[in-house]
Image 1: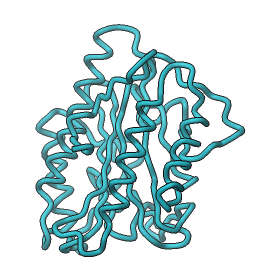
Image 2: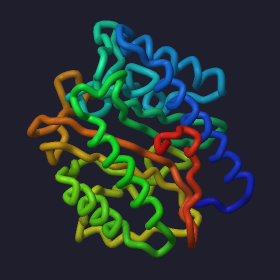
Image 3: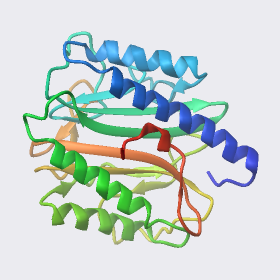
Image 4: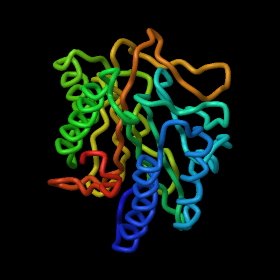
Amino acid sequence: MSITNESELVGMKKASEAVALTLKEMREFAKPGMTTKELDNYGGRVLNDLGAKSAPRLTYGFPGWTCISVNKEFCHGIPSDKKILGEADLINIDVSAELDGFWSDNGGSFVLGTDVNQHQKLIEASKQILHKAIYNIKGGVRVADIGLLIETEAKKRGYRVIKNLTGHGIGRSLHEEPSEIANYRDRFNLTRFKKNSVVAIETFITTTSTSAETLKDGWTMVGNKGGFMAQHEHTIVVTDGKPIILTAMNEIWN
């Protein structure tokens, strides 16, 4: 969507704060020995208390309030009472929701407990690359140039990017134009970011894989060449200068 008045900005801020707070609280609530279903139910209660509705559930009938992916699961992991979180697991939580007609999306990867598997370097790369990408976005900048920046920064650190998962426009629905904000330079994408538009920017930084494949459950995605992935995401408003980070409350950069 494009922000055309103050009430729309207020609406987007409210929806964004709901998903950001939910992500932050879920990250803090997660403990070894807990099932991903317990963690998801907690996130669902936080969203409900804030008056927000789960976007993947509303839009796609997703079997959970949030997406929780563990270790070699890259994204869209289904919360389960059979999946138990363990010390040093690499966890990704993606929270998106609708509130009063406005939609927002955010996500982040983190290590549960002590980082014995050395995932933190990958996580930090994802965070830093997202920060650099977002602060290079303003009205008129080519979407493909941001993709090039993300892939270049990943390669500098010895990592790869997933090419079939992308950021996207958002606001009045979960996915809007621009429909694909890729993590690489798509030379066929001539789209430019527009001032006052709302977009969800995501990094998909990996150790070995370059594309994500869906498992038999119809939702969970893993890498085509295995390995691990870190994802971080903010919903922002594009301006002529510094963007407005609507989901800053999630504290993924802290």
